[in-house]
Length: 84
Image (cartoon, rainbow, N blue to C red; front, side):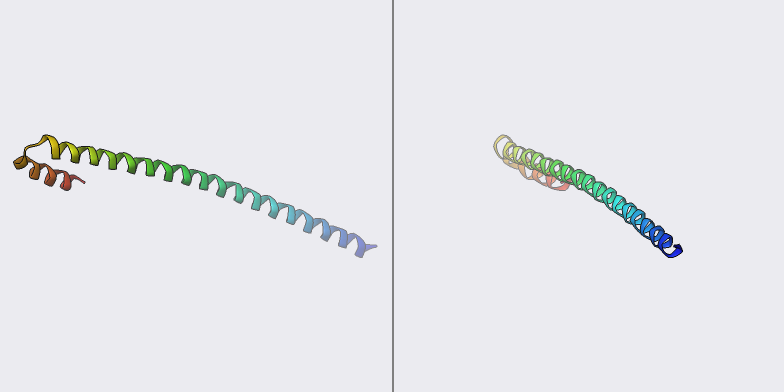
């Protein structure tokens, strides 16, 4: 009778430990998913920022090449090159 009771205790303990391990695994997967979503959003924001910077750079370059007289053009290109 004692062997049977001990076996049921061990089985119950194993089931409880398995349930706790499964819960910890689910929490870790949930946290990893949340972190991945934040990373994806940040990556999309960074790509959008790069697009904006590139378009502003193109705009400034076109303004310099069309609106600025040649002697000042070299100075402005050098100045913009040093700033970026």
